Amino acid sequence: MDSMTFGKYIPVNSIIHRLDPRLKIGALLIFLIAVFFDAGFIGYGIMALFVLVTAFLSNISIKHILKAIKPMLFMMLFLMVFNIFLINTGDVIFTIGSLKIYSGALFQSAYIFIRLVLIITMTTILTSSTKPLDLTLAIENLLNPLKRFGFPAHELAMMISIALRFIPDLLDEAKRIMKAQASRGVDFNEGKLAEKIKSIVSLIIPLFISAFQRAEDLANAMESRNYNPEAKRTRYKSLSWKGHDTIALIFTVLVSMSVIALSFIL
Image (cartoon, rainbow, N blue to C red; front, side, top):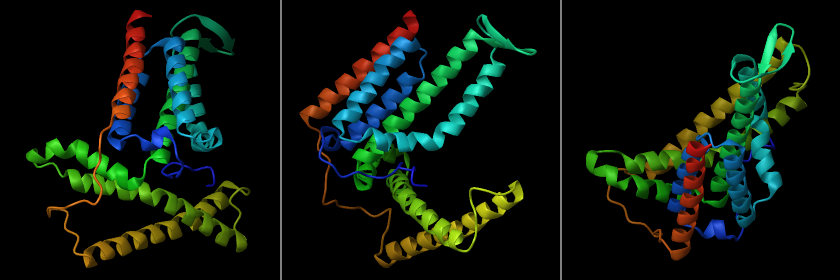
């Protein structure tokens, strides 16, 4: 649980922290589009350099980013192995019994691993450098044009903000429950499969009860303050687009377009 860092805001002074949250969300979406184009190792090298520069400018430690990647390693390795044994394109590299490993399978598995690492890293930088309230304002602002079609922009932005805010709290609650259960003799690391399932159940059930209790307390608090999502609202804080936001957006678009162009050339 200590390795879960997604959704945790890190209050440091950096260029990335001072950027407009609308820019950061838009840049992430553009980056996600570009990362799924098959631009080869050259294209992914460009994107990796872009991510490293962004991480350096955000003053977020590499250790923090690695903690966000660590919980996803099992899924990455599973997808890589799954692709290695199922893709039959390219030349045969070596044979394991009756199974043949193709060069195309190795390349595709490497691409999947690189894509997931880049996506997790950029998402972690976004959540670590942007306050949940700023994310809410940015999402609602970006979705405002859809309000004329009856789209609940404010409600959606509020739900996303609450979900992001609840992630660190639920992780902390899970750690407290695990310590409490461990003090009662529950072992989460060793034992047979049936014992591990019982250990997980002893964690999940109290965690769900705690999550529902937190949600009910939040709903009661909002209701007691006469919160009405359909009412016209004023804000003490408004987002302002500045010159460095435009420069960052242009740079992101140029990097993404160069990667997309490479995917058609290579």
